[in-house]
Structure formats: structure tokens, C-alpha cells
Image (tube, one colour):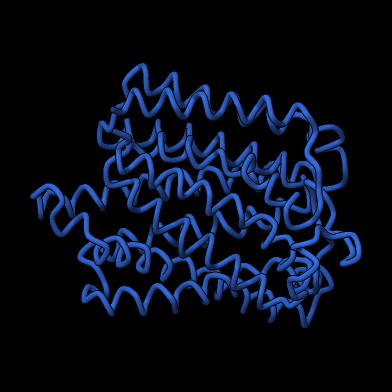
Length: 334
């Protein structure tokens, strides 16, 4: 039987796999600072309603989850959004997802002895190798334009923030489980998971809104800050095509910034992060991040579905290797 935590990690990857197309459209229409803040605010409202409707509201580990959200969503999300147009989605995703998995695994092991077995490490590495193989065809010419060093630095920052955020969340979840140790009890309920996801968003929104305010104030004095607020050009894996060039389904979707902000919030901070919190209850953060690293491979067929984009043949080899690693991970966890 596949562990529930692994299923939740796969749902996380699926949610994160849809968000790049949504983020690309939102950034193109709003600019990366506005797009990042808007998606977090929408998600905050939705998860807040769910958290308080289920009776938990703010959780017992509020400071830890707020800190995790401020680091992961606030710093990491903003850094990732800025790195995307500088490096392109494939290179940005490859750097962030692989480094985040290593960061989370090592930090959890050093901080509170959350270790991994050799089979789990091997299976996770196979997944990351598959991600690298699948993205390899898109790396030609990546990292050669202006702002490459800045883009790499931002991607590394996003990876460290993402991995560190997962580890802090895992530590807080273990503390909750220690207080309510009954298997399948309150600490594993939807109320606790939605509350933890909501608390994380509070920290992320605080940072994102603060950055937006600072940038808006700075925009009154400098052109560099103003460029962060204007709609940005599209970024890889493929430029956002004209509506006439979109896939049959994608052409039917509205070209409204709030539609894409809402979709980004739904599949990322709402579905993806809630599933990640659920996964972190039973899986080491490095494992969760390794499974979530499959998101770029999922994003490519989503782009084909919505934008008529066709992946190269080499992509499928990477996808097969990653799925094989996921199957091995399920056996190792079982």
C-alpha cells in the first residue's frame, strides 16, 4: 500500500506542476512583485476561511509556521519569480528543486536527526536524475543572457529558502504530533493541516506585501523599481504565445490577470502547499522536496495542453526515469 504521505507529496508535485503556466501569464500581465503578492493574498483568504470553518483557526505552532512561510513563500517565492525571466523556467526549476531537496534533507538530519535510509536516498536521487534528464533539452542557451549571475544567485536563495521552510514546518508538525500522539488523531486531521497551511501563508503574505510597498515607494524615485511593477515579458520553457497560437483549450481561457492569479493561488499555495504540509507529517523534508521536484516535468505537458507546446523526445526519457524513482521510493517507504 502506498503511504499517504507519499500520495500527498505527489499531489504537491501535481499542484506545483500546473502553477508555472499560471505564474507565467500572471507575471506577464502584472509584473512579478504584484503577481507574487496577489496569489498569496488570494490563497490567504481561502485557507483562512477553511481553517476557521474547521474550528482550528490559528494553530499551536503559529510562530514556527509563520516563520516557515515568511522564508519559503516570502523570500523564496519572490526570489524564484525574479529568477524565472533571468534564467528561464527549466534552469530555474532545475536549480531550485534539486538544491531544495538536498538542503531540506541535510538540514533536517543535522538539526533534529531526521535521517533517511539508503534505499530512500537512492530512490530520491533517481527522481532528481530523471528531472535533470527531462529538463536537459531546454537548457541549451539557458544561462547565457544578461543577468545570469543574479538569476543563479536568486535561484540558490529560493532553493535554500524552500528547503529551510520545509524543515521548519516538519519540526513544528512533529511537535504537534508529540502533543497529540494518537495515530490518525487530531494532528493528522484536515483542521490541523489547513491551519498549518494558513499560518504559513500569514508569514509569506507579510513579506510579499512589505516588499510590494517598498517597491512601490521606491518606484517613485527610480526606474529600476518601476520595472518590477510593470508587466514582464514571458519566460521559458516557451514564450507565452498569441491567442491565435494557443492550444484549443488554452484559447478558450480568459486573458485576465486575476484569472491566472486565482489559478496560481489554487494550484500553488492552496492545493500544493496544503498537500505538502500533509506529506511533511510523515515524510522527511528531503523526500517531500525530491518528489515535488517532479513538478517541472509535469509543467511541460500542462504547457502543451494549454499553449499547444510540444516537448522534445528526450523529455519522455527523463519522465520515465523520474517515475521509476518514484515507484522505488514507494517500495522503500512501504
